[in-house]
Length: 230
Length: 232
Image (cartoon, rainbow over the protein chains, first blue to last red):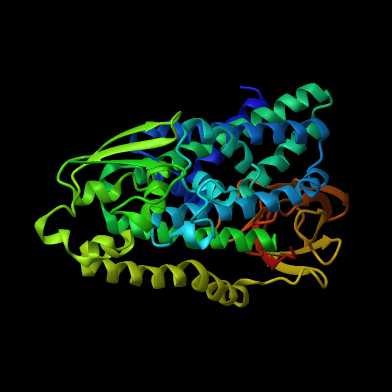
């Protein structure tokens, strides 16, 4: 096994460990938010597409880091976008939580009770009711940009790998491979969370459903505030 | 069996009136997925959504078409009121209690525990000078530049060893106490007797936690941990 393949394996393993520790705590709420809103039979497919999108973003970032061999310049460049994505994620989770709880009549709050086809009403209905499986791919692509400590750490390794490899194309591929290995490693833990959340048994318990929606709202606020401070 | 035809434009429907918007909202979002009808009807409703006509047709047994409810004022209540009437009291109490618990666990507790942890475990002030720890017969001195030490910046790490010298260069593993962030190793090169240097980056954790540790491993001698805070 070459040193690069060993590195891929190391980062796949890192992804696995980080997934069951860090990711469940940090990204778990996003997965829970999406999964609670889905019909049970759509949970796995939607989540797989979400992770495919997320890993694709990691791979692109890994490729850039590998090819350029720089980390700080690129992360500084995308810092504003990451801030926006974090705020957006917070808002999406809040809206999904509000929509799911049913406690707040959003039509009236957003002032278009008499205009159901108004842009605000339509946007919030779309956000709170993301049901289309295909929609989870672009969502994953976007949320792959969420600032995340372990992802940064993996990207640093991709940049270092790029610095060690003289050929830019090989460095790009190495960076992409490393991030793909890391990203794939994080999937099992988050899929497990999605599977648990999407189970019919859980969804049939109204109290759990309600607590879930409250949790979503708080987590959304948490993301939103962290995004503003980022 | 009752049949209703919901126009996506016209919201007024006799018998359901002012809450039909929410009904349509739930219907379209699928979040509640005909919660009310499933909950209060004895038979599952059938739905046909004709997108071209812009109408949704629903057939169901109206739970309010009973003798008891026909003249009942609740017949014209909002869905949330109806839901509340049917919801067991214990669920309502637990729901409200959960809000308080979750608020404290998600927002308040992390802030307070983080503040307490700060004072407890930091053993190095990297912003104002070097930090020293003893490792058997060797003193390990850590210096990080530029100061103040900020996350997401290229940093220069210098380790100075006094006393017994190692067989090979030491290295530094960067991480957060209690939070696995993945391997982030700073490899060091010797630039003089007992002085080793290398570059690395401390990443930013979106959780806002700022405590980091640098575990310095000196081959054949052992390892020490420097715990410090960084600026985001």
